Length: 452
Image 1: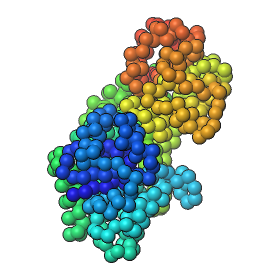
Image 2: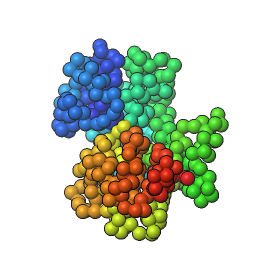
Image 3: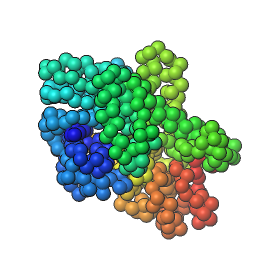
Image 4: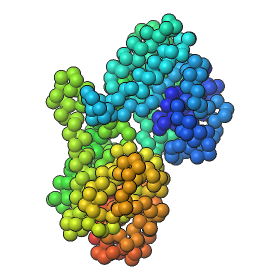
């Protein structure tokens, strides 16, 4: 069996590396049009950072795992083709700001239709709106070779920072296909790939539309829990309650559970906001405005939480941060990844810069150029945005520090030494609730957490 994955990003690269490691008899080729990205996958320094990924890639690369820019050859030789290209939110035309931009999905379908001369199983791995498989099927059915294709949905449920662990031991693998003999056979083939290491009872099969929709709904429910506890964090600050104590109390209820009840400056990443906005657009498209409004509120609460955090910094620093140095510790949207998409730090940095603050950012994994591009726009410069090489450098001379990513190293910094190097009074704002606030206050900080 030969597998080809089109798209060498956060989903395609790790997923295919694990399949190759777990199924050494299957040849796995990851193809992408970006020469730089493929070169990075073939180098000692991978294009993405995920704990454990280096070892997995090194174990299989050159044996049965290959990375190539020859997209057409990969398609032509494969029995199963995974489609893992980007599906960003549209920034133009109908559905701008909400609908998924499917231009790359359609382009891939047309390329497969052009190149393929033998039957193939096409697997949607990208996060897409329900009924996208119908579009792919129509394009493939119109190919000039009379080839028969089966289209399956196999959404990813990875959490960045734990992607390799999630792939090794998933809660479930979801495979959707047509309820026809051909569709059932295609699903059985893909089930057989995952069954090499995933217990069969964790591999769920559904119809195409249920599978496509399940991905959006799963992310929407997780994001909803975060926005819910974040809304309560504001009430806790107003009343003197402690949001961590409230979350612990309600999380003991077996009907609620403790996961995704950690208050913070807000969720980020490539999926949550994009998928909820996609869900909002779908609901509006199918004339369900009340449902659309409900889910849109989850995103609005998340945006408000980010702005609320920045506003609290300004208000606490005597209602002005103009010409004050603010150290931002962490820029990735979560720890153990270098992904900055929709990171809360982007919004907070922009708000502080708009208040004429000098913002000094330190992140252990995100390159300086990427931080500048995310905050200012590509090619833009602002002398008030400075990138530091360490937390200590960022905090030296600062009026306040703000933790925006829960990197483990921020829990063990020498805060007494940092305090001594800061302007007084020195402020600390913990946007992830990972610091010992009483200890910081003993040192001399005026320390604040989310919902405390």
